[in-house]
Image: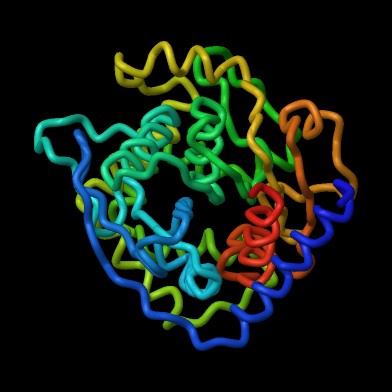
Length: 328
């Protein structure tokens, strides 16, 4: 059998699995928790425990319910879908009451590996958007032997946090107002006092064509009541701009990430066509080809904004099944 025919057969198998997953009734997720050296991580699990593990990571401001319509489709196809709450969200808690509530990119990337180790997962696939995309990208870049495949929903997200942060085009700077806001004390106070209203505004702004319901938002909003939420969010946005120090144990990792390491694992890139934070062009760019040497697919999803797993769950689950079929 030729390589092309073999690849075609895998893609057809993935398409069939995706179609079956969409026809069968959704399976209910189970809420669980697992302890690492730093956190007690709450997570939702769906699918057979013997299935190949898929770790699905949410962003800011969101929670594990972002994958409520993705995980059951993957579970129906025989995979074990694991959706953790990031540090500072929902039931996830720091073990040490005195530990500083930090959330630099190296920390959330390490949280992914700690989560996998706590569950005894030697190999797994990853998907993520926003903060979750950054965590997934870091885990894949630094531990390619552990990551079988990767779905990224916001392009290449690894940042240089040790050098200067040059300004972007004015229109891009305008859309990042919330980051500048969080870098002043008024922003901290505003997030603490108005977290649910502010986060809802970001949902509406970043996904202007998504008409989510009150029920959908209210299922996730309690995750922002986590006692560490404000500190974690503020530290994340201040650290990336050089206005907050990071953890000493991650200094070497941040220096490594500042070099924008290539992601060698097989990757599919998904972009929301209406994502206010970063609309992608129709063609693969030279930077994408360089940063993702094993790029398998790249798609711009029309009619979707920043929260792709919520807005277009079929596109996300189908992309994951196709990628997994291509990497057997």
